[in-house]
Image (tube, rainbow, N blue to C red; front, side):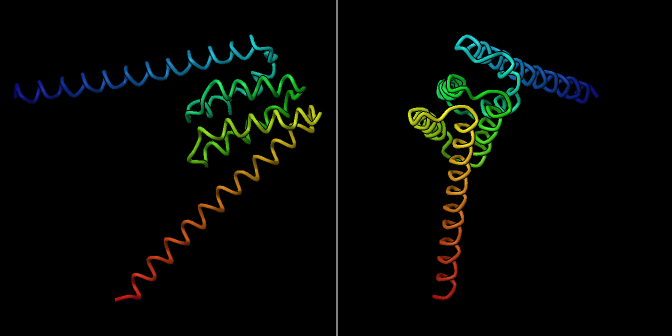
Length: 165
């Protein structure tokens, strides 16, 4: 009987400890995100734009993209007069690529260089946003096509192994 009572208390203790750790991790993410938002505002991104892109931005940061690259992309877009819904469409597109791409560390640098390249060509505002979104969609399609090719090669190898019996 004593043993059951001790096990019962241990079970609740571990449940409570697990819940406390989970809540502290969530709290840390919230604090980090608020810091990141403040950094964007300090860099000159309007608060209204930061609020507009809040949800996809949070998802990207959780996936592990380098914060400095993301901050660079967003500030470059803002300086290039990409605002509001156009900025959000770019961030959503980046989010989709990061979700589907295994090499998330290169996505930020690719998008950042693309933004700078389009800006140097004199493209600004909505046109720049559309160009970035289109390029990101092509990047996403390219990665999904290469994944399909890899899967097909694996299937072909399996078929060859089965035939060689």
